[in-house]
Image (tube, rainbow, N blue to C red; front, side, top):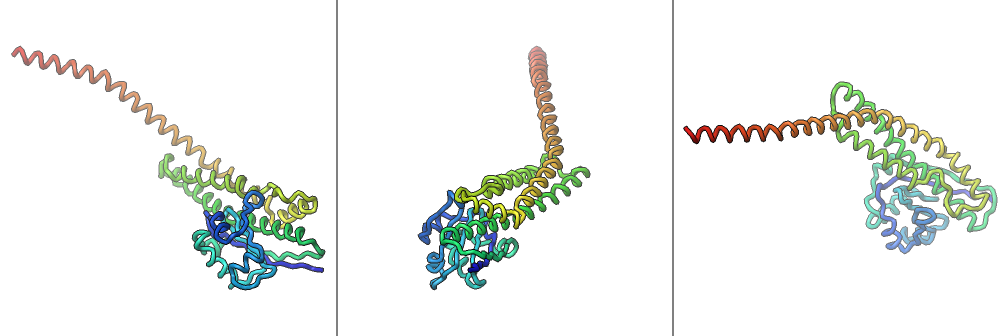
Length: 273
């Protein structure tokens, strides 16, 4: 028996509130294993107000939502129902960062095994969608770094500019997202079965997750190499200014004593006139 499912995954938020969603809709929160709130068909039906066999939704903590077997109108209706608890839905992100996938299984699986396969592909698709967002954001930072170098070579802005600090902070946040939040190259805890491991590895290759992650890391390294000399230059300039002020203070201290002594002698002289 052939089983097929259609996936649609969207980036919709930067800071979703999954705990609030799970509490409001009375949905178990499997944050430890999947970093997601999972709406089974009965939960989806409670939201859409009609029977929804075969329809599922995964809300991931990095702001991606993955729908299975949803029509466009149903997706829109579900998102509207989420807004009071999930947080603001960013439709600019929704339109720009999304992935679709059709899954076909040519073997009959037990319900538990089928559920794991569906979860597996939802997770990989969500990671793929988030990498698409991170990749484009990194391209923007890379372009800014190149323009900044050009401006610095012309003398503006100063190397101590907040632009350098902001770029560095953005890169650090992206690294933390990729390593700690997405766990791009880590296998989920509940995919211990050998067949699931192989399926997961195959899904990663299908969406070129390792290759895209490596590309992001290479670009981050390049950006750091571009801006590091200017950060050091900014540090050297600050160090020079501090040294200048220290010397100035050292000069002013004896000068104040000299002037004080000089004025006291003038006052003494004037007293005897």
